[in-house]
Image (cartoon, rainbow, N blue to C red; front, side, top):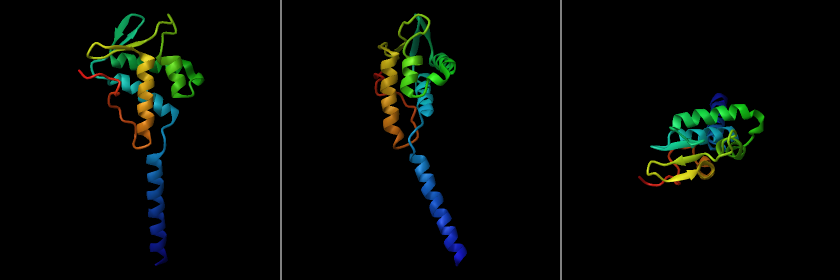
Length: 138
């Protein structure tokens, strides 16, 4: 009898902690990962850097590299957008994203909209990597 009661408490606590873990807000590093992934999987989009056009995979690799070199200077997703994902540290020119329909926006605009979407959805579920509402229809 005592063993069953103990087992019930263990199961109840396990369920409670699992639920809390699933509902935990994303860390800043998870938000940054989600931002990088969002450009990597953006259908038909191009990442424009210093006048050169790159696909999502190359954009994600470049942003990961910049994140790595920025090191401890990047503490938040906002830091990442400002220091790594907005402009070239070489030329100072803004990065741009050209969507499949030809519309072009500065990358900081895209990433800030993505961050808002990620933060809003993280309270409900793990971060979805669907295209941002900023992405215009084809």
